Amino acid sequence: MDKPIFLIGFMGSGKTTVGKKLANCLGMNFIDLDERIVERIGMSIPEYFTQYGEQNFRELESQILKEQQDKRAVISTGGGSPCFFDNMQWILENGISIYLYLTPKALHTRLQQSNIASRPALQGLRDEALLQFIEEKLDERAPFYKQAHIHIDQLNTSLDTIRQSIETYAKNK
Image 1 (tube, one colour):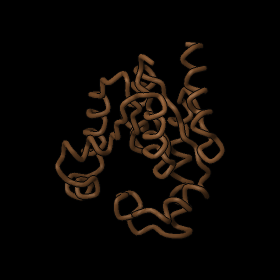
Image 2 (tube, rainbow, N blue to C red):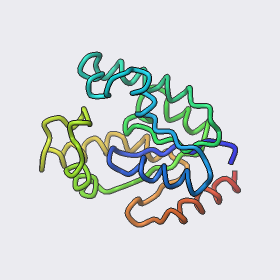
Image 3 (cartoon, rainbow, N blue to C red):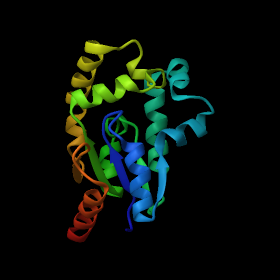
C-alpha cells in the first residue's frame, strides 16, 4: 500500500476502533487525527472549542490533516474533518478514503453510551434531541462522506471484508 487510508464518518461510527484493528491487520501505522490535535494544542478538544471556537478548531484540524505524510498509515479523521475547506478533496487526492456508515439509530445508541462530555457538538443533547441532531448532521455531511472511495456498513462488515475492499480498490486504481 503506497497511500494512507483515511477513515471518515460520523462521530461514534468506529473510526478509531476499526482504524487500530485495520492498521494492525495491514501492518500499517495508526494515526488518530484528534489525538494529533490534542498533542499540538496541549488541551482537550472541548476546552479548545470553548476557548477558541469551532472556526479556529476547523482551521487547525485542516492544517494537521494535511501535514500527515505517512503513506503507511491508517488515519482516523474527526467526524467533521471531511466537511470543511477542501479537506475531502485533499483526502481523495492523497489516499484511499473509507466511509464507515452507521444508521442514525445505531449512532444514537453508541453516542448515548459514550462520554458525551468529550464531544463538544453534543453538549446538552440526550434522547430525542440527540437523535434529531444526529439525523440533521448526517444529512448535512452525507454529500462529503459519500465521496469516499469505499463505503462500509459498519455493523455488517468484517475486518477481512474491509481489507478485501481496500485491496480490490487499490488493484483497480
